Image 1 (cartoon, rainbow, N blue to C red):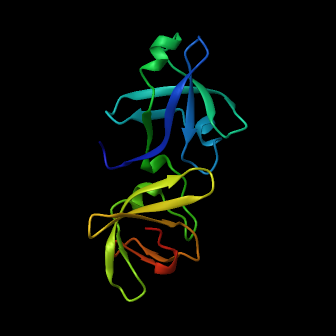
Image 2 (image 1 turned 60 degrees about the vertical axis):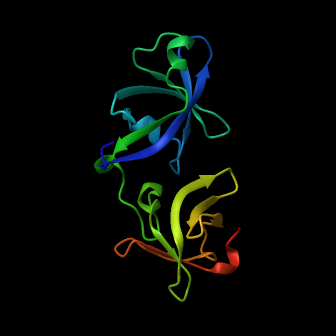
Length: 167
């Protein structure tokens, strides 16, 4: 996978019989997919989307160019969708692409090493960082101002408030 690409969503499943797919966006706004039609799969296959509508859930229903029926659409089930980093908007202060947080070291306020960020999960109530602890255990912490004290991309470090760590 090209490191200049950022994951912006996942195709969850086919919709209907005419080849539409449901796409769960990882972006702050599902409108992103109406502006960015040139996307890539993990294996670098380029796909072109024609976005049809945004569901109440925030999911996007779209057609993939060349896909004509549900059977062809099913091939894309659970495929992550990427965009070239240079095509993404400039971030505001204290905004981060999830892709940039994965693998960062997690330390407490005394700079004691706790582990590394393995994933970011969002089940609808806000993002949580999944932390692979040094003792091979998994912990989570909410990604909010109270729990995350500092994100320092140049030093590859995230400083957390251990009171919010969920083991």
